[in-house]
Picture 1 (cartoon, rainbow, N blue to C red):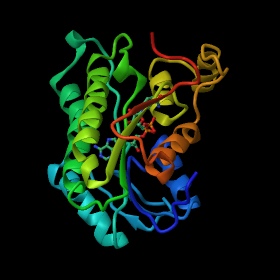
Picture 2: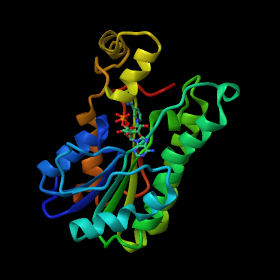
Picture 3: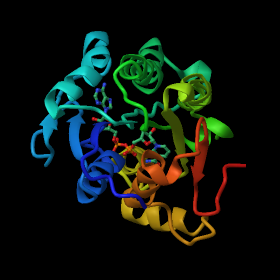
Length: 242
Ligand code: NAD
């Protein structure tokens, strides 16, 4: 994979499972990283930009804040996300606002603000989900938000490639992160046992670790993916959602 030495990157959801792995991987390859999350204390990075992505002014201002803090901006990873469970008739207004706000509106705001700031040769990587491509049961609004960010990625990829900005997405299936583990715990399952059982349903024999997703995000952010635009790359261990 191409070296990312000297590249300046913004990562949202940097305190979470996939986000933390992306930050570590970017820094290991020589990039300087601005981390965004509600609490970024204790994360090793070149710039810390804590805040709530549901606040429009914070999301709108993140790319400029990262550029100012790092002295440039070449890579944006829209990774922050929330999962709400339930069918539509079980979904509250609060669930809707949270899911759409974090999973769609915040990356829309960040992309809109970043595009004028990004130089030719730069990249945005959004984190969608296999469930955005083929929905699973009982998570209607989450699946819809992930379909929305996948579609927005395809549109933005086409629309901004002429500026030398490549915009792509990854679509993971199950990943061993706090998002998945707390979901098991809430439903009364032991997370370690549930993760091991779920792994048996994956052709590769295990669910993804955050690093498995981070490596694909870094590939898409790097010059090795220089001819990829508007793609949504599934990372699923051979287990596509039916
Ligand atoms: P995670 O819960 O470990 O991390 C998500 C991070 O987003 C958290 O650190 C959280 O604080 C941050 N965040 C949420 N709401 C925020 C807000 N309002 N303001 C600022 N930060 C906020 O989850 P993860 O599994 O690492 O998920 C990362 C991405 O991967 C998400 O977009 C998720 O939808 C996607 N994804 C995860 C899985 C999985 O199985 N874990 C599968 C497919 C897609």
